[in-house]
Length: 275
Length: 310
Image (cartoon, rainbow over all chains, first blue to last red; front, side):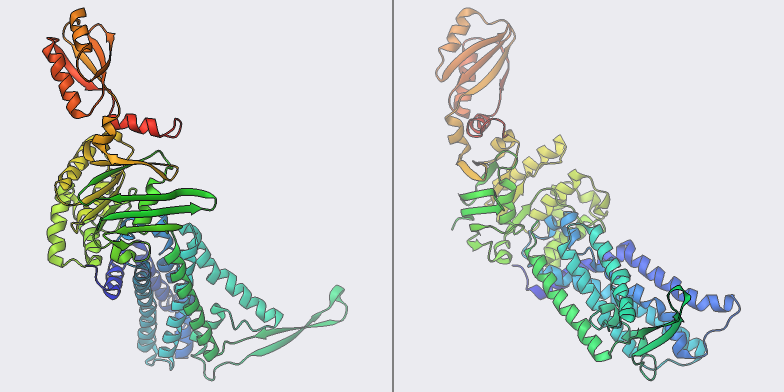
């Protein structure tokens, strides 16, 4: 008799992890993490400049790849997790078994989350160990920054799963996921500065808390006004630009809402999807 | 309780009706050939029964459990091969079997024992630890059959199980199915190969445009249609021999096709076929070969399925 869903979820997660461990994507993410970290650690002394004196700034420098790493993890481990079962016909092997599609979905998500968390954790470990070795200290709030990064990671991973549950092609799902977080939402965030609206609802804007939490005091919104020659060089025109910072509590709520909505919706769609 | 019960099953895609009010009951221990032209609704029916598609209306029960509302419980004792499934290229056949075996709640010991048995049965034991990424379509089809048999199911649902196999592979798969028929297993097997169905199955269901046209035993379906055999002889048949053959019981027509060949048609099933051969030999004709022109089931199929659809 088929076991309960919890055991089946563990089985799916186990074999998904095995697939990741033998695949190229995990290797690519790990190599990229190590290479990027190495660049921040090797380049300054190599060109004769010094590391930042401030350990917080040094940590921020090393962690500047964090956003892209999270996006790459969500893309590599989430964006085609569902659609590939249909597109590559592996669903014909897995689905006609006594297992709920929800259990398959959750098992896959757990495996994706584990490898993605592993990649982010590796990055933080490299950053923390480097700063500790070079500066002899660890910036305050590193743990909080890591926790916020994981909240962001789970949220964008859930959205990647949602795309994967909707799209008919793995390639489209991968491209949509990557460009949504790498290009589309950051553009909306940037437009907010010019148009002077705070994009608190944007998940990439909310992710800023994982970096700004290192700053003490936590930065607050600012409006900059600059003067420039007017049209045809006549008169002076003033321009104002806003610098918005995500509120920690609100950003955590926003990311949590994205996660819950995307996760539930993608389970619903994956369950209804037909081969 | 019959192992497979389909009641007024329909599946629609917008205006297109893939399966139309289909009802079919398969008795325990019976092997049913599920026939029909391309697009008739065979694979759609099988996909509904294996939880790959949702039915628009109607019911389907496997071992008495409603597969539409309780797929997990319904598929517990079912093995299925739908189309030619792909396998995760990073996993080996042994791991694929372990994956589905664990999902089905088999113990590690049982998985190891059964994996060895089924991989040997489908002749994949030598590549049990090679990753499936480089496997041919035929090897994947064999692995699909292995995973369907792993847990010794009481119901086996096969969607064109010999598709993609080379002639030797087709024969071997048919032998596997024939071996299973000796047990208590119930098999529903769709196929385009009519002679395969006639050779392997006890009963035949013919479907067209989503509707069931007939469901009966191979013997009953065959008995209503003439069988034509081509007889090749060592020497030319003399007029008295020709008349003697024509006079044999069961014979409906005799035509001389070549100097050393006759086409003989007769009604009845395999027993009539045997009687005709014995009768011809008794006339003194030196028979070199005695070949049925096509399977009797083929006549039934061609009679039921309109031209241009097959």
